[in-house]
Length: 483
Image 1 (cartoon, one colour):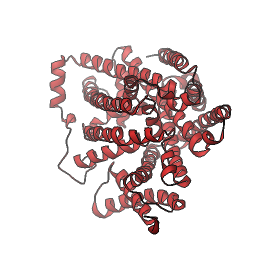
Image 2 (spheres, one colour):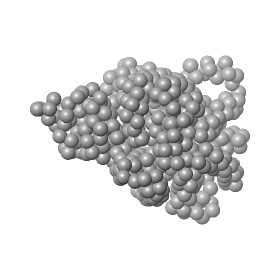
Image 3 (cartoon, helix red, strand yellow):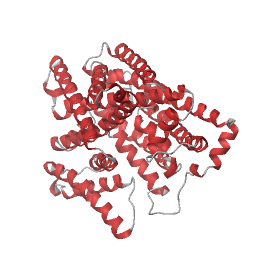
Image 4 (cartoon, one colour):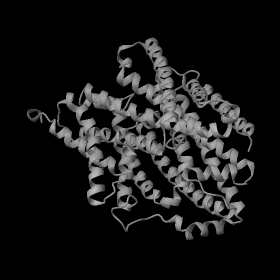
């Protein structure tokens, strides 16, 4: 596959993306940018959200993960489905009742300004790191496929990418994102299904033989009940999936502002439940694709890369399959990452403008628009700088550390929301930031002690411990005479 073909595929996608963004967002005001005017049809929101939780990292990582983890990820996906129910029937009614633009306005109403700013800053740091990492991954792939041969440095690649992301989200915000995420879902799922078709055909399987091969493969094991200390143990992954979904979707401004763009709570609930069913099927298909990618690599005599993330690119681009498979891979990767970056930039702009600057309360419509545009541009520039930091300093350990730090930030959010919703206790709110910072530190210490002293590996359930430390800390801050 030539660099010209890659550029042509990316350019075609970008052209369609800008057309969709312009058509959907050309009349958007501030309410359209922040909430989509709460007029999004629930079925359109559900279709958009199928790909909303996925990115280019998901596209390359999930298929490759079957070599080390089999289908154990499905244990967590089952937990996701339960977590979606909690989001739909507990959080959605609350947020609609309060008419919030930013989720973290709830913390202000419940505890005060310190809790509000704490939640907003934790989201901001986490989302900035995660979104920048997603863009860095696709920039690195495009650098290898195209820009190195053209003599373009990665800083130019990253700056141009973020310029385009800023341009297509500048006007429409959430109102545009629903439709561009629908385009992302079409490209992502379409690339997945067509790639699966071509790989199965290249292996010479009928569909019945392909299904039998997956069932018999040792890579397709789903349930792990044998070792409670393992990170793949069923109950650890299942319950972690519930809390991870609640925290990283229900308490995430990026994800929820699209769900809250529906006209009514009932529409938002229908959207969320349909999304849960569809995402389960899509993730299962990604894992099935991973089985066939390894089967094809073995049959074709391909040397497997050191990192499992490289298996999909290796087979799709250099595996001797039809050129259309490589193009499908590029389109899937780029669509997943661009949409995720645009969604993150919009959510960051919303949270920073509403929560941290408080512009929605103190500015008129024209002033709010001016502040929003300035914040949007500044955050796009900041994301570019973070991407360049990844290029300068990133290795596997740093990237893994960033993901852990990003996941830690949702623990205090989960703890604060749980404490606020499950109790009526009042706390000394000025000390909430100290509790929110201490909880991840105590969680990291607990993880280290259990691993070194007991040989017990804390997996994704670390989020739960993080939230529990936050709740315990807030109990220490209770105003005893105001219970």
